[in-house]
Amino acid sequence: MDGKDQEMVVEVGLLVVRSLKSFPKQLASAALLVKKRLYVHVEPPLDIDESLGAIYCEASKVCAQLDVRVLLAPKEQRSVDRVFGEEGSETQHGLKWAPHKKPYDAVVLGGTFDRLHNGHKVLLSTAIRKANKYVTCGITDGVMIQKKKLFELMQPYEVRAKAVEEFIADVGVTVECRAEAIHDPFGPSIVDPDLQCIVVSEETKAGGEAVNRRRQERGLSTLDIDVIHLLDGKDHVLEEVKLSSSTRRRELLGTLIKEPKKKDLKTSTYLVGLTGGIAAGKSSIGKFVETLGYEIIDCDKLAHDLYEKRPDLVQRIKETFGDHIVKDAKVDRKELGAHVFGNRAELDKLNHLVWPVVKQEVMKLVAKSKSKVIFVEAAALIEAGWQEALNEIWTVFVPKDETVKRLKERNGLSEEEAKARISSQISNQARIAESNVAFCSLWSYDETQAQVKLACAQLEGRIAG
Image (cartoon, rainbow, N blue to C red; front, side):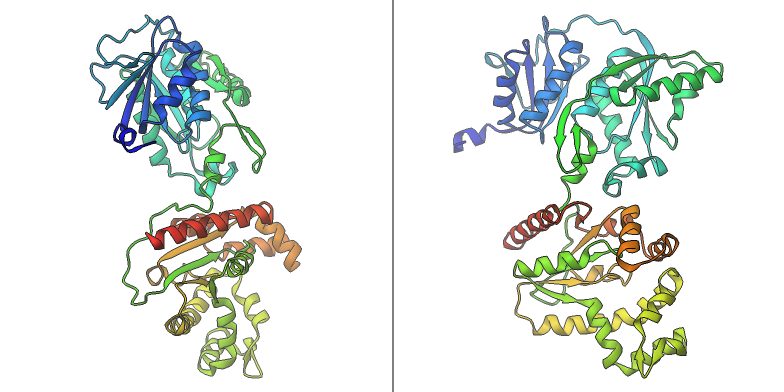
């Protein structure tokens, strides 16, 4: 694209479509010239309901990162920067709308709606096209989301609900959206007597049938079940074949999920904290980062060395946790670990004693170093409150059941002991909330290393920029 073409790139565009045959070419051309959002207006003789899935499917193939939205109701004047059509540029004036009779007053559907994608848009649009008055949207939260892959990276309920409400108001115009958090498989679908239809995917059809059984038990009318086809979207890592939010979350791994704050650290060295829960794979990533040419400060090793070099620290540990923790003037790390792991209060005491001393040693090493970037690897980095002492924080995690499995295999712990150790630490979500980059080591070494390589490449770009 030359300089002249770049001047034509706009934030928001509107594409007028009259034929599915010409749509792929139209979309590909328009997508090159639209940066943020592309509305699609379907004109007769093309039918919106019959073409909805095909349009969003093509958008997922051609311009997955562009927010494509099929308009479902007329609006007096929509704010767009440019209108595209088969013959080139058009205007919003005189757009044709086919007459459409909606069969129901109230329609219900449910889902996680994390990082709203084209599959969600098909579901929501189908509900909008069928509802005269309102669409009730149950949005999973709490324990309901914990069964989802990489739920630790899921957006908060408030963000997901706002995205659904904004989408329905934007493309549906006159239809009311009633978004509601649900903590069980049914939510408002078995409570509202005015509901007439439930929109489901092929995967959740059984859920729609379960809703009707519950409604019958409660003396409510059963709902018509409208089943839509899921959009294709293969993910070989997650072993999924349909477009999903899980894939969107996986694509976040190794990328910047939160912008680093500007901090006055009184050092020219860029400091990256590397942390993670027990058995998450932090040390393996640290070793791999080192092979990429970066300097690593291993704080866990530093802490262990301090147990031998700092008698004052050893004495304070002895006074805090008991004489049995210190043998021959040295901290018995195995005994100390058995004492603090599984007990959050005792672990907090240890962190309060050790990590301020470790931090002093880290800053001494940083002051002596000539490296442009140093990774500070520490298990309790966030618990120790080091966020303001580092430019960025990178976190590695695995699901709780995988952590239990690894602790049983690696450490020979029972399931109860493994869960106790996990509960003594902060949660994956708490770490990720404080982090700029996240990794998941659930899959192969190659996959984890690919995430790390991506993160390091982007890091170099941030530093250079």
